[in-house]
Length: 333
Image 1 (cartoon, helix red, strand yellow):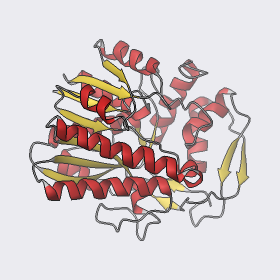
Image 2 (tube, helix red, strand yellow):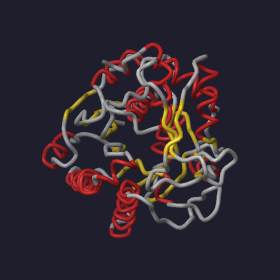
Image 3 (cartoon, helix red, strand yellow):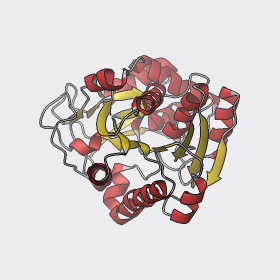
Image 4 (tube, helix red, strand yellow):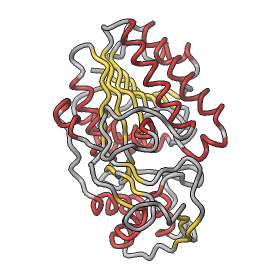
């Protein structure tokens, strides 16, 4: 099949392109490079020995989208703004880019008679959990505008399927992607100050940043710092391939992609320090608005519905993230 991948030059998108190409699919990447690099796609081609069709464009440009996806069979939709803190400060930008962009994408799919979609959602749609681990039937609510955009898009997809049950839609709720491809050629390379924990730790370890800020030390967790379900990006990318392969009949299904294990910020700091053999100086800072104490998945539905489970542990995640950072001290630049 030919797969249209929005945001395919980004962190998760580039790793998913590797999985798609290595499993015999053709890939068309559509990306505006706002938080990604075309260098990542060149390196994907190096890893796989296969070519990618790359089109630079914004998902809010419906006419460009409609033309770009001609001849494609399915869509994997990664494109979107993704920082919780930034979304609190800039909610209108998040609603415009994420929600309006997805509406443009869906209309373009309809124009091209493409009805197979894997959507990049998030565990933020669960809000502050009532119970852990999180199952897909947990009540949906959010604590920040980023999460709200993902929930709105999920609702749009469910309404779309109810109106036309010939669609084949898989909604993948990610937990916390980390790590890098084992080659060290592609990994997480935020263009500005990292919004996510592991790339920030990696930049401290390599000497690009002086110290890590840990936001909050009095959460009701085993060491007072926030607990999250960290998942290796290669496991996550493989989950997209399995989801795509499972879309053989009309449906609109939501699935968690996580490990089911919760690690605290300090757990990750200590594991990364061990993997890199570098000290990670940190400062305790106030809690951030919109953050929650703990969040980790019940990933059992992914196993039964699409035959997927995470394989890589925290030590492997840290090892691979450090491998990428140490080989690329300034990222793709």
